[in-house]
Length: 578
Image (cartoon, rainbow, N blue to C red; front, side, top):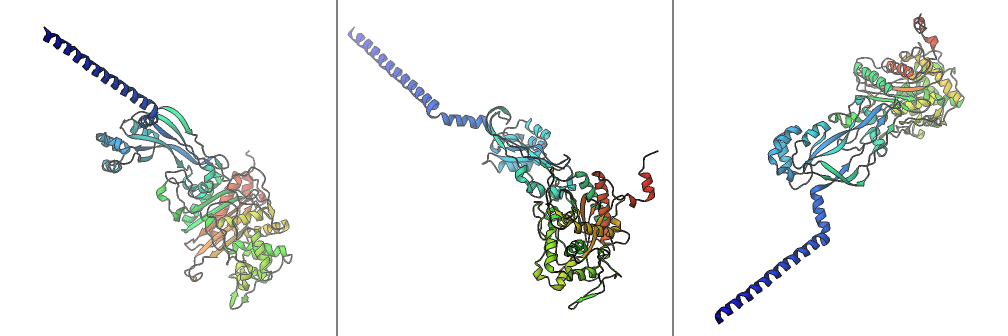
């Protein structure tokens, strides 16, 4: 009996001991769990939230539109269209590697290429697969629900007028809204957008489920309203392209300015390029020749040298000028077709180099230089166009007699098409110099008087004779409008001089204003190296000037000032219908 009682007591004691151990263990486990919970909830809260966010939240980019570019009438010249770019997290895509063939087909890419892109970037969390897809095509990719494949909204620059405005507008980087050339570069800060960011919850297919918070607001770019009239731009482009092709010329430019405001209404070049096709973009094609390329202007500079003579008070339009050959040192200057009983007006109308030489040598080099400077030669026009050249006008102390003589008929100085057009606009504004503007001007533009109004009016009257039947620019005439202009056929300089009669190359230039009675438009046409036998400006450049301004004046509703110049049949047709 005693042994039995002892065993029973031992069993109870043992049971109670084990119970206490189990209870203690449970209490310790409970305390450990509580401690861990406290640690997770309080001490490691930030870490856990970060891990959760990493799996379910993303910082999404808020894309913003780059500002649009418009012509003066509100026609779009450049716009940003929404597109989607497809990107991937390679390590996540590899978890569904069997889906790569379907993904390659949806992206219209080679399967081997796509596999290589994914497998060679497993250490990265972001890699572009295709940039700038149409949203509808990109949505089909997303609907495949392949893990690790996502979309990003971006914008692609589009130029509705294509190559018609290519040189003027320039372009942005291929996949970024950053201006690289033309107005896109000149006004990049104005047009540029500032992207924003927000935190979102996404599902495992990359689709946004809920917006959590805004991190930074997106700021769209400002719109730019240019001075360009797209109608005149198209007209100038068409006429220039036809002339360059028909004359088999190397290149050409046309610039049209509003005389009253200095606004650029059209600026075109050939050969052109389409900024929508980046495969065409190369430095040789996208430079704006009208603003950057310099050339010797030949006889188109003569009215501005004549302005110095008229301003001196020693000359007037009917002043007789000796046009017999003149010798300076070992150099003899003579005209191909000598004039008899020449006046300053006929020297301009017939483009006598000898007459200009004798007149220039009778003036001081400083007075000619100051007059040319007043018209804007040797300096930029104020347009702000990137890369615009100031041309070349040397200090008169370095001219000498031969330098003065050759400068009087357009050699020894260099200009741009834009610069020359600006000078003709100053002349058309009766001697008021206004800066060139590539933005629309809505208020009257104050200017600086640089020559007397009398001088300007006398010059315009003299230049009308250039377009008359007795002048060199007959083909620049406009039906119903009086035109004041000047031809310029210049030799092109090359290594060692201007070449021989057999190898010589030419620039054909015509500049002028219309209507001559109260000029509204100034324009310059430059055709570089016309071939096929015709190279005189009166035959090559003057018709382009006539065609462009005939359309531009009518588009702008400028009333005719030369109805007496119209043929009788034209006057009858212009009357009211019976």
